Amino acid sequence: QVQLVESGGGLVQPGGSLRLSCAVSGSIFSINAPAWYRQKLGEQRELVAVIENSGTTVYADSVKGRFTISRDDAMNTLHLQMDNLKPEDTAVYYCHAFARGNWRDLWGQGTQVTVSS
Image 1 (cartoon, rainbow, N blue to C red):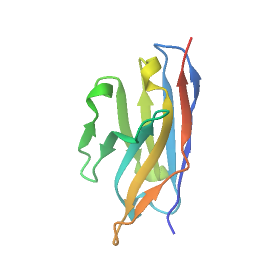
Image 2 (image 1 turned 45 degrees about the vertical axis):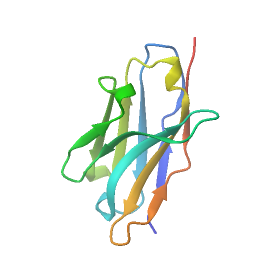
Image 3 (image 1 turned 180 degrees about the vertical axis):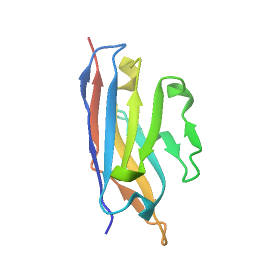
């Protein structure tokens, strides 16, 4: 069974950077459409960025030009580089993908990102 494990969250000042990672147990080719979501306190979970198997990327308008999603197939890892962070980026960030074959939802446990001075 494929599992997703995030790392890299923490506390950063406004304007700073963080890099989140999502390790995929087994092969990254066992999943489809890996993505990052986030959930702010009291709000619904929202899509931040997704990267298709073709390499095509899609970003939420709120993070365009500041966040970059990428995948390292050799390391079976998904990344989210977050630059010029703002207080409104504070949230729990989740890695998500669909299991190849049955399209079952796969979620990581989440990692907290706090942007504050």
